[in-house]
Length: 233
Image 1 (cartoon, helix red, strand yellow):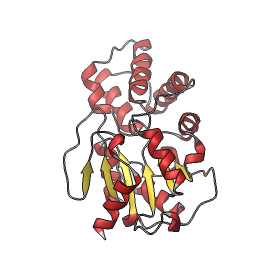
Image 2: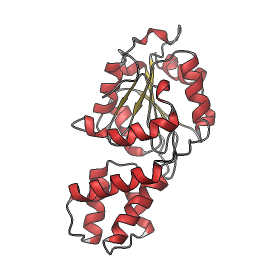
Image 3: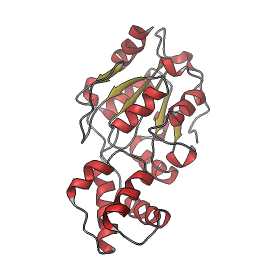
Image 4: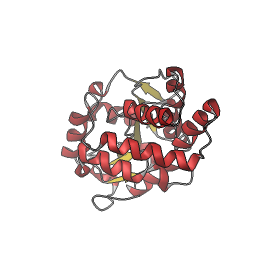
């Protein structure tokens, strides 16, 4: 876990019960899911295996170990998980090195959270070097800290990344709001005890207790996030 500014206490979120906002990256703040699929498709094509589009819905939003293991199983490619992960990560970084598009509403939300000094963390299953590349598009100054998938023993859907982020911000997970776009990420946020806002990108997310589903980040602002925690307490 790295921090662009020192870890902060959670008392800056005004008088509301909200103590911190924990944001997923791929598919939530930046539109990178297509880049991941392109990287995987190109690497497997070079190895002689054309990936069927149907596999895209299976690998999206999960940790790389799950995604690559699935693709190994369906293609029978002879490389190991570690070898393929290196190739896919390298190709992905090449694809995003010139910048990535932000999801609708992402820039406005980050600007509002920063303006009100709400402790905010970026929590992703992507590896550290990928997060650092994407932060150039998101603005590292918008996050007190970030947690990468290769910095925790158990990444999403386990709660560890969100628990680590909340601890780093000095926040009670029950007073944090997690914003996610996949069922895997939603499961991680809920397992950590956070309120969760689901913004489905490519795969629908079913309703669930304590889960709020919106159409895009354009429906999410600070007042909305505060209301979710205030209502729960």
